[in-house]
Length: 471
Image (cartoon, rainbow, N blue to C red):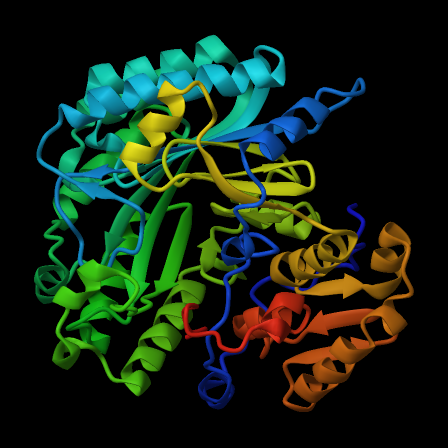
């Protein structure tokens, strides 16, 4: 049992969809894959600060588990909805140079850690990691294995684009040690696909999923997005039926955040093609009801899983954690971010690498780690992070347990927040029951709003326009 302390969890599908509440509280806010969120990182936390914390990790006999995130930014084509840090190119030669420099960073990071440390979790994201050729994928894994020891029982995942991955490449990924795969779908409707420049058939998607199961992958995730241009209730219902027929272990159902001022590719999406707010709300409600009816468990925020999936088991057992890849069964790991724009977490710090290839190459040519910014969290950040983790992962927390773990009197420390929570209690989103704060079934879809109550930085901010809306 973790420090937040859990009561006997109610049924994890104890979820009620209240359209009126969703309309009322459809405001912008963070997804809380970290706290403080990445927009609070500062350039004063530089490469020297990062190195000092890597060194501190080696002090003492016991260290936290270690995870790796590898950012592979290249894509063959551009998907108009995408907000990721990516490089769209047909020139596959560019990945060869990137791999050379990625190898330099891997070796530098490993040396700072004091040698081949054991890794229990790894994720390759992008971009499109499978932009790399079969030979390059093997080279990357070899570089990682030379500098880190991969736990044979660890969790190793990769994002794939089914349009660019054949069964042979899936088989290779399995042979290299990958055991979890995330398949981008978004929507199978041809009109929607044309509107977002991502043409992808059901057949090529199912072929990748079948190959993953054949070659030892223990978990398959499918990504979906609602609120895309040209989406209709009937069209998205057909997509959901096709996805459920694939029987993925996990499904991520994301809200499309249309922020063309922030993400340039989104400017190619016509405003006239965007679903109206009420249609978007109904798309979400219908999708949730369909997934629950099919037997999937609502994990939280954007995620669903089968009841026997590791995520659902971890949630029932109080072991669920939220990080930059979403929900995780691994606890508070130290995370090494590798590649352009990747984010890491060492001890009480977060850090992020430079965003462009030019800066990345220049830093590594100089023999320095490509850290651009970061933050060293305070004691206040830590207690607020614990609260946000408990609410977002388990929908409840014990005030006494948080107080004991962080040496505070919870009620006095969070007097302002508790007063605001009581206002949300009047709307039926949350209950304050003795020592417990419990998100109600009606409030679970709005848990981001409840987390925002405890976000000190949002109270200091003048506006929230850079965040996506809850719905």
